[in-house]
Amino acid sequence: MTMLETRSLMKSFGGIRATDDLTLSVEPGELHAIIGPNGAGKTTLITQLCGSQKPDSGTILYKGQDITRVPAHKRARLGITRSFQITSLILDMTVIDNIALAVQARQGSSFRLVRNARTISAIRDRAMELLTRVGLSDKANMVTSALSHGEHRHMEIAIALAAEAELMLLDEPMAGLGAEETRAMIDLLNGIKGQHTIVLIEHDMDAVFALADRISVLVYGHIIATGSPAEIRANKDVEAAYLGEESGAA
Amino acid sequence: MSRRNIITLVVMALLAVLPPVFYLTGNAFYLDLATRLTILAIAAVSLNLILGYGGLISFGHAAYLGIGAYAVGIPAHHWLYGGLESLGLATTSGYVQIPLAIGVAALFALVTGAICLRTKGVYFIMITMAFAQMMYYAIVSIEEYGGDDGLVIDSRSELPFIDLDDPLQLFGLAYVSLVVAMLIVRMIVNSRFGMVLRGAKGNNERVVMLGFNTYLFRLTAYVIAGAMAGYAGALLGNFTTFISPEMMDWGRSGELMFMVILGGTATLVGPVIGATLFIVLEEVLSSLTVYWHLPFGLLLLAVVLFGKGGIMGMLRADKEDSE
Ligand SMILES: Nc1ncnc2c1ncn2[C@@H]1O[C@H](COP(=O)(O)OP(=O)(O)OP(=O)(O)O)[C@@H](O)[C@H]1O
Ligand SMILES: [Mg+2]
Image (cartoon, rainbow over all chains, first blue to last red; front, side):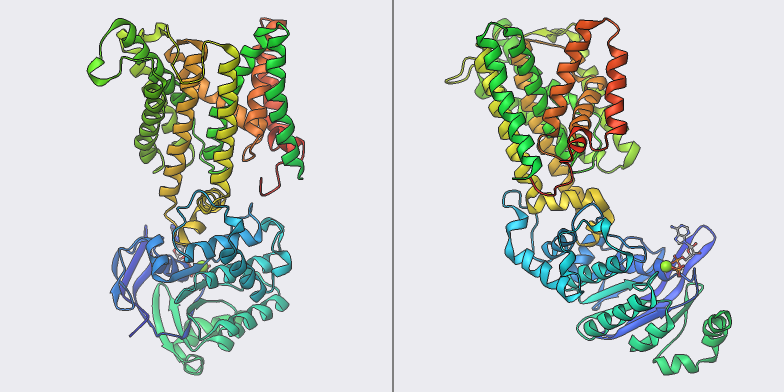
């Protein structure tokens, strides 16, 4: 069964068609990259997939089920998680509390008012394990605002992992990272790949071609091509619309 | 022990010991002052749950004090003058009045919170204030309960073992209630529920994306805070024995907010320090000069503007993550 499918998705902001008749299908277990120039509508697509914005028309299917009108917090419970292009963390909480909250979300009801959350080892241990996995265990008790941008991006991945989501929507996890940090992030994603279905939005072409099983190219809210990295590289339309422009600018 | 915990223990110990000492050495006035600030501190502690830990700037918290006070005053009024016997509301029994105060306050919080929490930012502030003013005008319009002239409570709530006519016992009840309120807030903010509430304050979108319906968490906290302030209102009615709609005025809500911010938001003892400082300064300055409002206001503004994190911030005790 297809993991995620959109059918003729439409979304306009005033006169701008941010999503224009967008049809996409993501297979279970694949890392599906979505590339496209600035303002192509990549983030807008993610927000509709995770439910924080509603499409004007069209359908979103998740494992065959129509989720177009399912609210965001319920989609999260169904196994869809997103990371944010602009880091979205709880800056005034500690690193481990951020991750623990994500673990808590996964482990069932949080409408519990009595027991001290920080003494529940099922939550704390799992949070620590995730921090270790993204290389941040030594920063666990620091307040989040004190960490670097690169470290914040790693926290985002840890939070996505905490959800044990079947479908991870990653919006430019390398945005603003230096060369070194980008390499660390590619390694991290390579380690995750295959365990979750991932929709990866990324500008960094080296990262995309290193990681993706399939690539879709988004231009003006419309997908103009989908295929393996090799196919996309060879595609003339894509080159004209996007890759050429990119390499010309570089 | 952390600096924060030491401050908390010192403040609470002083508050337990000093007022009775003053009273027993013939300064009854200071006990009165302490009882008033202790009761207001309960309301400030409850406001801190939603304002400090939840980031919800509620500008209508005094309404709950008023509701609680009238939940004592109205049954006491009917007990004396008749009416409402069929509802069992002509009584001075604390067993009726106090649950009534808590229940009506919780209900008011539930109904208004369900609406207010659909809004954000300035709209939230305005609409919480508007609901509180509605309550104010509702009481003003009821002639039977004195309208804006207020209502005298002729007989205090009757409770087992405690005689509220004894100032020392009334203070004792207020003090124990404050400690219990602080323990409840501490328990809640450190629980899984509390983590969600605090997370939503820092970054609501993120917490929603984790799968939490933050609206329900906030509404629950809002109701708990309202219920606690309703209880404080019942004590306040018993303390002043004269209640009027003025106690729900938006200015009163502002004072409660000020106490929380002055002492230090999202700290356990901050609201208690804030309430103490507020009441004591108000008393001292008003005895020195009739023009005390201006220096008082300026002083408070200075602490809030320049001492980030209020008094607890100035004492460098606001950044520790757990209590
Ligand atoms: N909330 C909004 N209101 C109005 N216009 C919007 C809104 N969100 C996005 N847009 C517009 O929709 C278009 C697509 O934006 P989107 O952020 O999805 O692009 P993107 O592909 O993620 O770009 P980038 O590579 O810069 O992240 C842009 O023209 C943008 O200005
Ligand atoms: Mg974007």
